[in-house]
Image 1 (cartoon, rainbow, N blue to C red):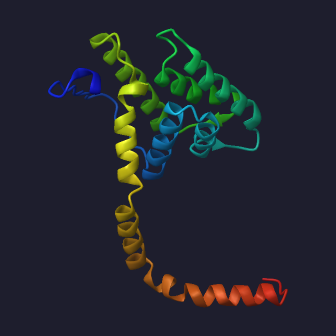
Image 2: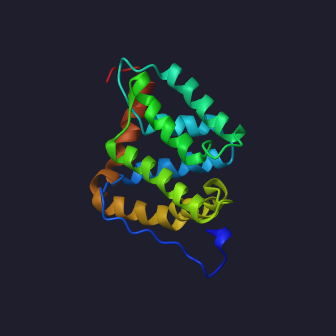
Length: 185
């Protein structure tokens, strides 16, 4: 955290409830937080819906409207209650009112963010997680989206699914021919 200087580091130990977030959810969370700190609310809302569990009864438009209100009011708030993590927690919590649900581990994660921010504010009243976490979020995004990581993943998938990948061009050509011939497949 940049506001504490180079040598002061803060570490948390918690032996309480443990949760796990799948890799794709972690990537989406990084995208959501990255968009929020840049005031890109439409993108943050899009990715929030991508990690949600939506059913036929979900009020997606109502939930999107609620999210937009939560995210924009967070940015306009001068109160300590109007924080990034509280906005994210409220966004997750409000889903239930619109029949939009989130995995329990994601709810735990949002609660952990609120706790982290609260402890940070106790240690330093000027602590602002949206400012202090931005370098971490950007560095993690670069690491997650790096070309080297992409190539390693591609190679791993090629090894695991080599037979399918080898046959893929043949299947694509057959599909294109069927489309051109207007055949039903």
